[in-house]
Image (cartoon, protein in one colour):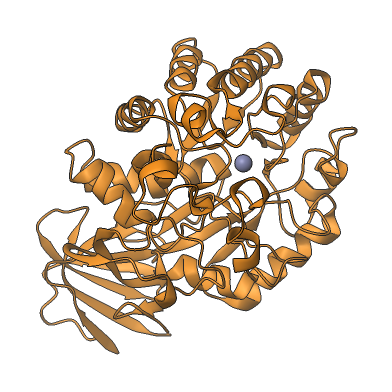
Length: 433
Ligand SMILES: [Zn+2]
């Protein structure tokens, strides 16, 4: 088994320490000048974080291998500093049976770039008519704990209630894509001044907030665990803050793009107005919403950052706004965007970043081998990050099979230098191993 000595890393931004990885675990931490190792890595100036965990990744396989595969998506994850991702269920076929989730889980094991934890669909075929085989997916080799119809909302209150009740048996959680369907028919962009000026059908904040409020009440009523996907409005934050103040078991995530970009990108971006690179579900909101989301992530009302990495082939994005697919890739830019939005602004330190991008998402997804502090005995899932550089985002240099990043041309801070999955490097010198 390999032994790797990381020299002079700043764990969570603290004083430089040496970290010895041996047999898949963190073996020793301290001044290890005399330690023997098969490989030594100079980490002077680098911040060491526990391997990042994403609760919300679209790997597209099976069905849309033209956009992404488990292989390319997990490569992108490793390049972004991730050691585990949750693969969303809206594949083709839908991950709504033990067979499909086991297929995705096995593909993840074969890829080896990071752990892949499949998410199971809540309803068969994401059709919102009957519950999928939740118990069979939980009992399968994939041991599914997170269930979501993401991409679609479980809008039927009775089905949502049943799902919340059902997952209690195996400590599961329902991750809701909160979007009231009738209020968002044909919706294109956040309902507001920008959508009015551009003549794009508005996507009102209330369509998200109404479902979140309902689901918090349902989760409390049946005593179950609810997770709210990609929170995007200031009003949603207020509802979640209220639900948490009641002691209800509600958690929430925010995407990097909702922490940095606003609906004005659709009007005034250097990439040109009406550029569908900014079309995403839920839509980019206002500067006021961004401020509220940042504050909520900082104070813990929003538990974690989740990428909602949504790869699309060029032909599905480079078309007119109304016809374009919704979504943007995000695995390889998540940490730089969080540094820009949260660390450079003084809202989070590196310990806070580790908590919101590793510890809490691992806990919500019940991934016991991830999200642990970097300390002796913990699985050696470690990311080495250089926060001191700034560089332009280059989509052509990304590992993802798709190129739909909204940050093209922007300059962002930071660079993932190395990622270790159970002591084995998946990325070194910024490159895939
Ligand atoms: Zn979604």
